[in-house]
Length: 395
Image 1 (cartoon, rainbow, N blue to C red):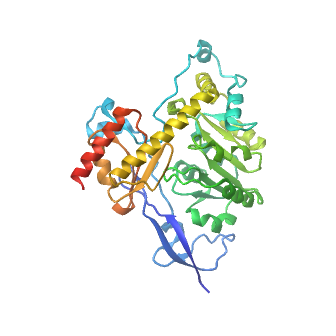
Image 2 (tube, rainbow, N blue to C red):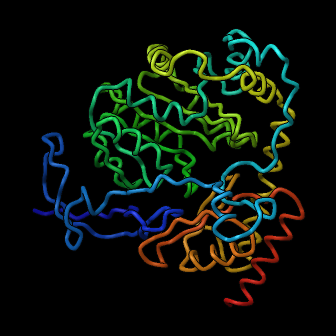
Image 3 (cartoon, rainbow, N blue to C red):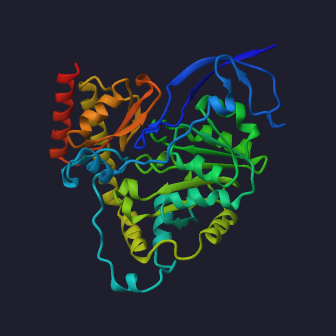
């Protein structure tokens, strides 16, 4: 007898707009499910009106990212210096760069310079691997595991699914409510927590439950915590003594230094050694190691940054609410809203030198926007004025 269950999921397809991610609506539909054996390889079931899951329910992100300011300046004919860039989830207050001694430029980097110790203290772990941005780990992880089936909790940062597919893995992009159904057929589950762009934050208890089910079969749970620095108490970093639990951390977002290219992997020792061998020596430069050590050791500065981000988050939510653009999600570094006005508002702001992040859907109702944090009062006033002007023109 056919069973029915509710599934909340994102559905996406590629957009022809090069600068946009294409995302269909976040829909809730009732799907008649047939009994099937996923373990036997049946990854396709009929869903009335939607056809095969493997195509109809797959998220396909174009690998474009925020912060493409030069492209926007060229497209809209506005000088680079005249833009307010709110398209990224990077803190707009960058840490001061410490003095870099000449030897850091002249010599090969060494691993006993204090970076690992500072990072272990900051993340609350006793082992980790520095990498040249968490992106380096995202690309390397598929290369240290044999083929299998990978689930990616979507929507999320597009590079995860791309990296696993590129290395020959079967990838299924699943919604939050689908994970439990598919988990026993997966070898790896990838979760971005907090999610980018939705801001969804999953509890440690739920993630550890998923990990336990995967670990029974030698599987992995990969948790990308690129936006976790503002809520360190919710991190799974301290749990990475567990086999098959891998946590990725990004340095540049919280510290406002994305150009430094530094990240960290936390996992069991065997896996860290495999990754280190795959990535190779000297992946993190000497100057980067010095900057990282200084920032990760600055506890007072970190507390100020968290407070500043939280104040800005509250202010941004209030500003968007004021102009009937209430966010549906977000975190301390960005806010996200689904609105039929997304395309119109994006273009309106861009023509005035304010760059947002557009996630373009098949219909206006399914499109969304991400707002980063303004840096100072001049930026806040500029965003306020643009939104005020927008509401006057589009009441």
